[in-house]
Length: 344
Image 1 (cartoon, rainbow, N blue to C red):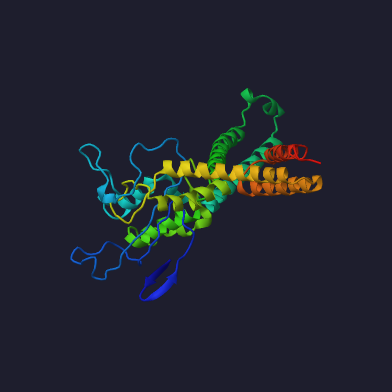
Image 2 (image 1 turned 135 degrees about the vertical axis):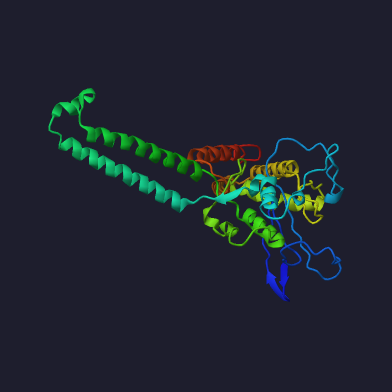
């Protein structure tokens, strides 16, 4: 795909994702004026939003594609569209809230680490101060009897330590929770940037947070960052659904905004993953069944088990023990066919 700007072609080709907004006919910052016809050469905008996250049930409505302007209303009220809100933060926040994959914010890792170190040094300083007070204590009775301790300096430092440790523990807990969130998927960030480039909702300065990709995190609770499921959901299912003409939902009235139901992508993604697993298991089994040479069968078992573990380790985040169990089970199934019918 190319974006044309002032007569220059800019290569913008990239892999589409399950949630992707591609500008196909140039970049502009707003809708065309009302007094300009669509055929007057005014730059057009086009993007595609493709949803690909897991869901449990099928939608109850029809699946066939139709323009967003023809999507039915719910009762006496029309379906909510992001265009119903004023351009700017109201519309941009509505877009981000339309799907959890768009909930992308900065992690502020550097600032959190700096605050953590600052609070840590504050505790260390108070610790040293308390140790000095204990060392300089003239009445040893106070050190072994808190109720009779009359050293007001020690009491003041202990109260400061209480507050400092509370603040320190709070920062540690929040940092751990934030660091546990998954990094933002790059193409989700690109989708937001493309939408903003076409609409110009917010100033570039305030949209600059999207440029700090290494510091962005996703607030999605259902994000799956395993490589293989992610590739299937975002790289395969949306292309299949596009060819099948699956119905779009009514997040936007713009006929060029395509939104695919998560139920469809979830079902199709599971079907594709199941097919891949079946192929990984049955292909070497069929080969072992057809080959009669025991040495060749053993070589097939070793090779396919190594390939299986390699794919599993790169495409999932399984623990080492889980990989060992999976490899042992897989090789056991294949070894059965070495001693099965046709063995010599």
